[in-house]
Image 1 (cartoon, rainbow, N blue to C red):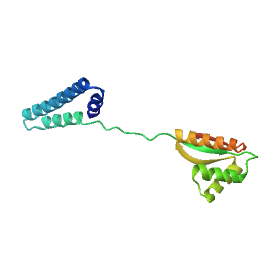
Image 2 (image 1 turned 135 degrees about the vertical axis):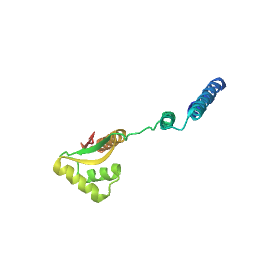
Image 3 (image 1 turned 45 degrees about the horizontal axis):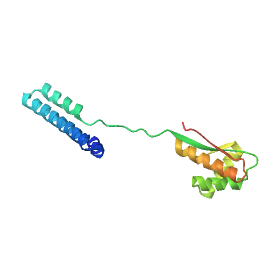
Length: 150
């Protein structure tokens, strides 16, 4: 609700006043409900449970944010791209050290493809595009693609 007041304030004073009035009304309603429950509470467990239920209903909702789906960036083998170029790509675009880049390059060479990294979709797509553009600019047929990570 505070965000609505700030937004309304930015829009103009009349909208701000409406948002402020709404916030004030909600505060009064909440206070009145709380007082009514306390004044009618005769100390038995049913009243206490009802009051707890109202507090839970008025409590802010917990929003759970799930992580974005992840995608593997894959290098595909070809018979023309030099191994040194593949190692340089892995170092430049994926931040690998020479030893790790060499291991991934050998996996691409022997198994036909290799995983360069796992990222959210937009980052994976961007990295694959940058690698493909760099390979074309360097006149190499190296292909990079993405696939969903299970």
